[in-house]
Image (tube, rainbow over all chains, first blue to last red):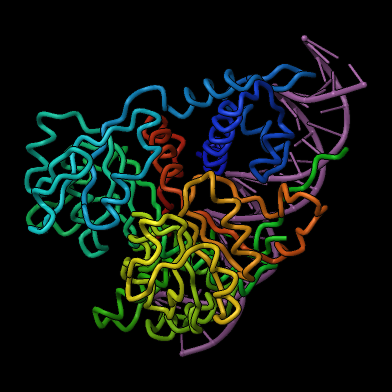
Length: 232
Length: 232
DNA sequence: CTCTGTGAAATATTTCACAGCA
DNA sequence: TGCTGTGAAATATTTCACAGAG
């Protein structure tokens, strides 16, 4: 099914970041070798990844930074705006809301939610934190594309369900737990999992990263070797 | 080189989390099917992942939760303590320092560092935030195993270099930038990259996750299909 | 009869070599 | 000549089918 490897998408995001960096430094041209070096992958890989989506370079010349950047922005779907709600406004949720860079590509935080009386009602980034119970009402008047989930793991599945009920198409899950892509344990209803059809879940799990790091420190030979060089 | 897939390690972390959950609920036995369902992968995958490291089950019976948990803890290197410093104590660094769960497996924050006068000297989690310049001195008197990097991307490479100079074996990079596993632009010195030999870098990149999510919302058919069921 | 452990087959991904265009 | 774009080869990973232990 995956005709384009998932890892390729992660790499495209990296290439885009590098192109932004080059543009800031007024570098106008680059090459698969240069991108590969900066991204820590092979030049073969860069060319193959780009080839999945089109032909963006000039043989013998390389790539024009603004053009390749524009094309990657388009490919990744960053040339439109995304309305985001954050569920869970503890320290992590607040750090996410205030992290610079999200607004670079028109990711807009339109709603912030929590259940804790200590947080509901507070102002964060110019928005008033609402109560989770108001989420569904909120989505009746606001188009919401994705939800960021920064609640404790034991509340993550229910909060994810609420997001799906509210109609979001994607969830960025920061909780250290697997979000089941189906409605679970809803008394009296057999299977409402159609709600989940087409909902994308991406995970950003810091505790998992920490544990992988521990493993690879103890087993460094199992870590992916550095990218092979292109022959000179 | 990678005789054990990197993805398998991520899945082991997930299995371990599930086992902790089962143990809390006093469930004493499980199976590759049960774990697979909870982890969102195939039962084949669970058995193969575990088989890389040993034989932990009983044929016809399944797995004993505390035993499998203990074995995964051992495999992942979580049965020892890890001394961690955090570099960058802005909102994200503080959220990381206070995030519950890190101490479950003896990950201990032993030092916190920043460069901003507004943060240096503050108390976080019972530690006084020190200045980056004091990092090397600090590591002379404290054994430090890993560093968490929560600085702005333009400072990430230098901060990573400081961590490597300080002797850490692994870096968990939260900055949206590629850490080059070599000493760059150090005037007068040709190649000190030996310092970097064996240093592991793992990335936890929330902005990248957000962009991948945007892509897959627009291209849901490219998302890895749900795990196939084991035939009944 | 059940469910694990595992070699072998099927897929997926990466690497490579080189054709092709500037 | 230089560097991209791409089919084909090489690897890596996942899936499968079934032998084997309880």
